[in-house]
Length: 295
Image (tube, rainbow, N blue to C red; front, top):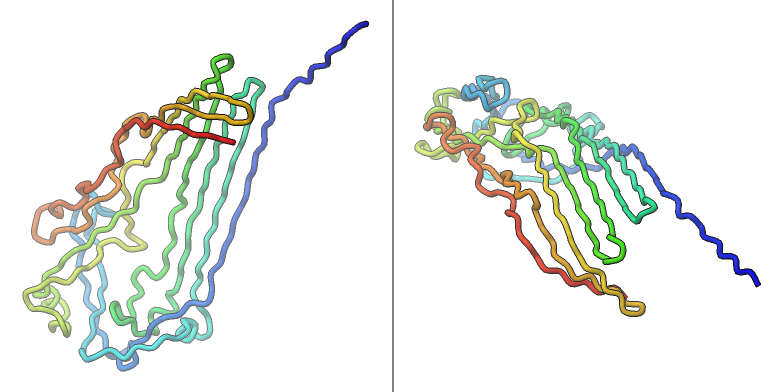
């Protein structure tokens, strides 16, 4: 009697996915303050942004601000945005490109990696100049907002060491730099000098916050946000039950990038005072014991 055993070789499996996404958004509502006329009841003034190499174009660019000429209680109503755009609503869309690749090798090594790249576009310039926004008036500043293309990277790799049955895995995530704010508390006395009167409802000794950043003057942090996590686990098999007993290493490289920044740009202190000082950082490296049961 001759016994013949056939062995099937497990071949590597590799797959890749590429997708393009285009989304459009419709049906927007806006709030209109009935008593005010956007053509006659608002005044505008121009203030020059502070000179600072950390600001877009080094600062020094003009900022147009609208203020109401008269006060009084608001009488708001909700209506279709297209009523102010001659029947047309804003152009609001998202475009994105996603790529992902998965590979499972003969020796049990598995890797998955991918990218997501996208941007938003919002253009309501033909609408904002015709409506009476209760806070900003018919101000076209930043009405065409075209985000830059931004890419997120991600990856996962795992390998089970034979004989000893130890699982080793790692994950990677790298996100684009944060977009930052620069809020400028301008004294109302300065605004009165620029526009010729004190806007209704403002304190003569107080401040009005003006955004130095807008769709045409963006501010970004100077680093990507990247972190790597790892896991080492001993696999224990009991019948149809599998248990992983291991250790998780979060933030393996102990990266300490900022997750929040001071966004107030001081009007009186040099270089904006504490503007852009980090107020929170990513959690430091830490170890966590992990016990997982699969059945």
